[in-house]
Length: 448
Image 1: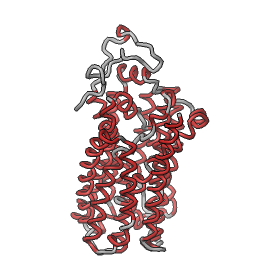
Image 2: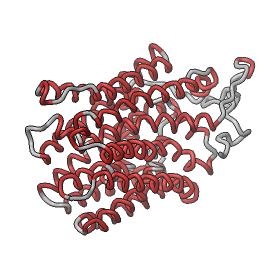
Image 3: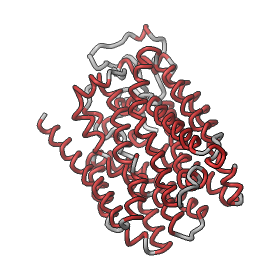
Image 4: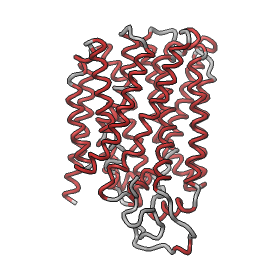
């Protein structure tokens, strides 16, 4: 793995800080942090979060319509499940605000511990939920509360590791290091989808809906515990804390951030909109479409999506190489154009039987990897050092909310009521917003 520091092969605390001062090495006996450890911390943290994310998303299609909304037909039940799915994205910015305050008062370790414990218990709690048949509408309320808990916890789990990687990456390796944390998405999906596919293949439909679906949520709790200790092992060190302080990666008030950097937050939230919109149009939406309108084996389709996620992981890595050649903004702009082109073929491919569905799915995963690999913090370099820690977290929250939070609900609702052509328009609008935001960002850089 290439060294993050452009000076000496490690991240040393005696590098000049943002205000030009140089900390004295005597203050910290050993203030180096292995860049490989930071990268591993990023990947482990994101994989655990995405595993939780996809376990819930897949269950929203395969389980929740029958278990929590049996009084509706399958389409309406799935749409209701997608409404609750969106609650986490609405709660996530709130979680960021709450836990930034927690960090200011109790410290980074306490913030991360509380957030990941909340995430684990919210996820595992779903595994113990009684069904609608047992307690009626109270089961739906409890599911909603736990989903909101997941969102708040995800907002609080921001640890600053991606920002630290970005700030210390050599100029010609920024694309490479930007993609590392994004590998958590395909890895988390592979684990979650494989587990559900295995359950579907080896259990009767009755056993799966009665108890089999609960096991992935238990596993999610165990993975969160491992991720918590792995991240705390790094975050709790004096060396890591000193590096964050040196780079001024500390929380600031949300009101102060928005009043000073509101334009950068908005541009950052929209710059990768095409990628975030496509994210759910190749993972959650196709699964719901197949469940409702196709006779395909759901376990076989999930295994196909797992293959697509492997292609996505390869594409994420390739995106780092491409971005270091042509620039991250050019990469995102080019991929937004290609995503717009893909949107035109959605109706044709999804109506062309299994072969067309497979082509859309696999090609979509490849484009997603190339785009999503550079989506994180695409324009957070615009933030002054003082605002970068909180700005990066809030920008990510808003990107997910605007681009992905309602995507399964909108895509399924539009396709079921108006046709797949409207899904094309939805994805096309995301690509257009990305191109507009990237153009505005470039114009502001030239002006400044």
